[in-house]
Image (tube, one colour):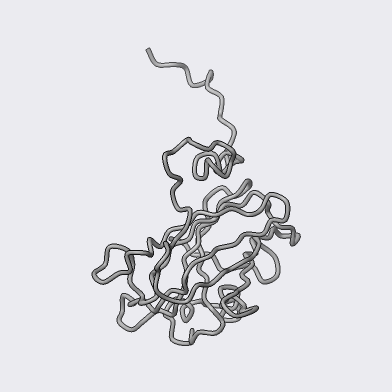
Length: 199
């Protein structure tokens, strides 16, 4: 028997959560043992070839306040520009990491190796970059962006070159703050809003 439509009530819309951490990072959320091994704890293992780097930053809302419940996921190539599963890829680089902002400061840290240049679909090479996916309370659909590095030659990167408002390309560039250390803040709106990708 079909239920009358006038008895149905629209569900409340949902965002990522506070529950996203429970599903994607249960140990971080205080639910250790939910999985035998947490997925994406580090994008590298001991012995990974290349320069070890550390990227810190915050996900900032329109007022400049850090989102303390942001969860990020990164994907990247190894130091030679190969992705896991490709011939010759570094077996100590799985390329995936899940990490969260600190609940007090809103700061995140990603420790990885600096990726190499990867082939582009139209020929040529993309500048070294790390792909990032961001979710947090209030974000209805996960946001995708990239991290490039200010001490690399980014001039011929096909994605950076296609950004219509070229002055905004700088929002994808991590600032070098020390040897092997970079700063990359993600701004959700307002002045210097980060360029997000429609993937």
